[in-house]
Every structure is written in C-alpha cells, then in structure tokens.
Length: 204
Ligand SMILES: C[S@@+](CC[C@H](N)C(=O)[O-])C[C@H]1O[C@@H](n2cnc3c(N)ncnc32)[C@H](O)[C@@H]1O
Image (cartoon, rainbow, N blue to C red; front, side, top):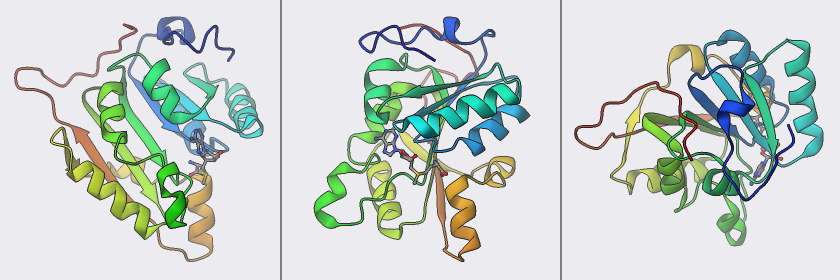
C-alpha cells in the first residue's frame, strides 16, 4: 500500500475493511508465513513490515492471488514503524522471525531486538499482547532473553501449537540444512485493573 505520510500514524480503519484484531510481522521477508497465517485467520488483520521492495512485492502478489483483504504490507524500517507509524497499543501480536543476526560483535548494535525493543513493543501492543521471537543465532537468542528478562512488563509464555507449526521461509531453509532454531514468546503484562482484550483500535 502507499503511505499517505511517514510522519503520521496509520489509520487502520482505512487500511482494512473490517475492524478486527491486528498482528504485525517485522521483517516479513517473502511473507510466506504471513500469507498462510492470514489465509487461516480471516477474523484478524495482518501487517507485514519489510525494507526490501522485491520481498514486499511478493507479499502483495501472494495476498492478491489468495484474495486476502486482511493482509497489508509496508515497506519501511521496523523500529521506525513501531515508534512512529503503528498506532499505540494497537497490535495483539508482534512476530519477529529470523531478524538479521548481525553476528559480528561490532555490528550487534544494529540488531532489531536490542535494549530498546521491549519498550517499542510495549507501546505497540494492546494489553496482553504477545511478542513471538525466532532465530537460528544462539547469541542473538541470548540477547533477546536478556532484554526481555530486564523488562518488568513482559512475562514468558508458550507459543500456541498452531503458530509453532507454521514455519517461515528462512526457517524451512534452516530445517532443510539441519540448522537448529530457537523460539520464545513474551506477553505484555497488563497493569493492575486493565483486562487483556482482543479489541481493535485505530486510535493514534
Ligand atoms: C533473515 S530474513 C527473515 C525473513 C522472514 N521473517 C523469514 O523468517 O523467512 C530478515 C528479513 O528482514 C528484513 N529486514 C532486516 N532488517 C530490517 C529492518 N530494520 N526493517 C525492516 N525489514 C528488515 C530483511 O530485508 C529480510 O527480508
């Protein structure tokens, strides 16, 4: 989709025909995971965030071919998207699967799931929302664990079986090559008195 502005938050009610719970994949690659997930769940809306145009075009092609009206893609940098474009507390789930690993020590500052990420996720998630994480990099997984353990706002939860069984493009490649992968999920702990809900919001 074309963004009217990258300075104002998205108007979700304009993006999707139905007001329903929103899930976001950051760095969605060829979007094969998101297309399949959106196909299985017409009662939810899905947004794929990806910086490479060619990959986003795949999302668009596959989504149109499958007739999905609950899937949209945005070509932009993930942290910027979370901080400035996604309406606050609008996502029921953030999916972060095989983010670029930046394995060299001096490059680790470029990793998406760094010290700031839990706060970005907290602002993006609806009460009770969940961050789902997968990686093949043990060192990155350790970093993910450390940054979320340092936040009092998240608690570890299990990944639902249906979601765990849905693999991504990179994951299938790792599996085919016998490379082990790691996964975790962290749920936003709702402040006392605020019940977790599956409500959709387009508030800014
Ligand atoms: C290793 S691939 C994984 C793709 C997909 N999640 C999967 O598991 O098959 C990482 C993807 O994230 C995208 N990406 C990396 N850093 C990004 C960023 N800061 N913002 C948006 N996309 C990013 C890359 O272009 C690439 O498509």
